[in-house]
Length: 441
Image 1 (tube, rainbow, N blue to C red):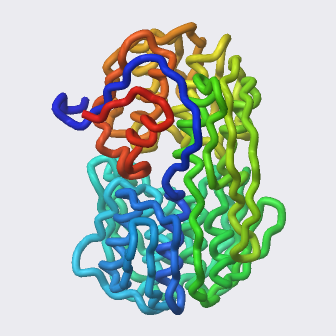
Image 2 (cartoon, helix red, strand yellow):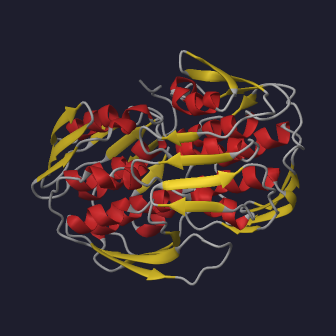
């Protein structure tokens, strides 16, 4: 449980949202831009960088590996690349904070180095599973040890990794990315096959850094030994952060709410499809984009208040909407009829057990629901009760319940919200600007 004196939100009930806003830069892309920029030859300029705690942890870890990282402005970063063999042995364990993506990708980056390293994190990250990343890296010859599958992650540098053919048992961009990062230094052709497409930011960005990849259906192949050339990376606004306002707009935008410059990579935007199936009025206005052979797509997104109805979520859409389920569950709680999500076991091992934590909170708001081993069943309610919610230190849980206040009859207080800064610094101010009656305490 959370400490009663910690950071919290108090959100008054009701209200409406409207206007034009943007959200911070994409967290997944910011992590990858830092790491690939470090491995590249030359200086990589990153604009739109997410200055959240997770990405700053990645920057500090790279500095601990001898990479010079400058931040002339909050959202502008200059990475002085050291090349494939230029990283230096760290003087202490590398602290990845709350950043699960960063820790898993760093396992792939550090496995082929000529030195040993150890990855640690905060209390939440130290409970999260790492073995699914370690297994394919070990197949490549990496020497990686976890503590019963969890951090600390101890890596014995193994400069002569071998390429593998690997079929991912479940779709995971983090496992795929770690293997590709290790494959850059492996001898031979790394070949990966996914059961369904997972987010492809790593593949797109490797192309921008000059790496050639071959795509065939759900398979990716890459020759080891390719050099990365420094480049300019323009980071779009984070779809996962925009998701809270997409749902807010569906619930309470009497006039259009427009979100600008949002990354709409199709491996990330499953929430739009789910909300549209529920009856949402969401319109995309694409931007012209450039950068590499396969740049990240960007659009402005316009959303209006909609009469939502419950749906059964197709399991095929779960990987493309996995981070958005906390706020999707709020949409389901405010929709007419029943919503069923199955096949979302991954939600059990996020920053919190998101299925269990959301179920407890929904129950406190008076929403009829059933917690399932791999999902949730929800019957939508006409209005939500007020309550004090424990977010369990999970940033996406905290922001999701702030959105729920738009349909509440009494205030909602959300405890343990400090970790919102990992992905969305300034969330409360942005939410107030859109129309939520939120106060950070």
